[in-house]
Amino acid sequence: MNHILLQSRIKTLLLSFAACFLAAALVLYPEQAFHSSIRGLSIWWDVVFPALLPFFIAAEMMMGFGVVHFLGVLLEPLMRPLFRVPGAGAFVMTVGLISGNPMGAKLTARLREQRMVTREEAERLVAFTSTAGPLFLFGAVAVGFFESTSVGVILAAAHYLSTLLVGFLMRFHEAQAPPSGPPDKKQGFILLRALRAMHRARIQDGRPLGQLLGQSVTSAVQTLLLIGGFIMLFSVLTHLFRHVGAALLLEKAISALLRLFSFPTELSDSLLAGFFEITLGSQLASAASPELPLVLKLAAVSLVIGWNGLSIHAQVASMISGTDIRYLPYFFARIIHGFLAAIITLLLYPVLEPHLHHLPAIQPAFAAGDTPSLPFWWEWFKIPAIVGFVYFLLRFPASFRSRTPAAKNTR
Image (cartoon, rainbow, N blue to C red):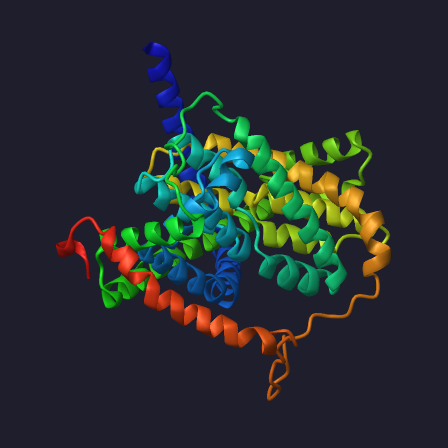
């Protein structure tokens, strides 16, 4: 008991000291704090807010319409053996990979609140779905920092391969814990069972379209305001730590580790910045000494992106704070992901680089005023597809109605 009390008091002192240090640094260096805060606000407003808002709204609406339950039944045979998570985790994985951080943590927390996953399954899911999105990898890092689409292909391949490896490794986390429930054993075509599950979920949700849309927008904006606050806070912290010299000891430790593994110490500056915030760390790695081989710069960027940075760690911790999901499994998974991504980058670079050297710059899907052309086989396929779709609409609503628990619950 005395040991626990002592730990609690030490924690109180450390947290109080950190808060006082931050306040004193803000008072002593107001100009630096202001400019770094503006930089964080610019990143949030110009990139994060417009990129993530549509995904947040769409994800909230899909959960209300039962799309998660549809994927849960449909992809249960794939997700359970590979990652030891229910099929609903495929929805989180897909949206997380497309939209990027911290979407995976937010959706996992929602699944946990709805009791669709156990605590251990939620921890496995958070560990490998909190990843960087393609918009950040290709737009910000590859084109923005390295000015090369080829770099984006290499980084994306390394990042997503290591993501899947982390997901497979996390299946051994709490291996003895019971699953969230047995998979759907009902007989019948799996697609029809998935559609019925989606219908039941929408009926149980019960919110009309207008209410669901309004609540989705409100929730998305509130979440993005929280994310923006974290981005600005860690932008200020990173700059102030470097300005006052408080990060010097950590930088020396990183340099020692780089020397130990025969890596150039010029990368220590970018790794230190990436420890706090991945955007700044990636930028500094791209601007490192021109004498450094590109493959080493890319390995450093992969390490930083896999680690996620303390800024995203804080966002994820905030997302799961209202649930019983523990933070430490995510923390250790980020370390594993960072090193795996760096190693895979070193292995993939000599294989992919010769084939990607002349890859053209990113172009829009079609120029303004052009009409995208459909594949030739669509002209033969479209009439049967339309007929089949109309038949589906006419045939299966009766099947859904016959399985509705009570007529008074339907809309």
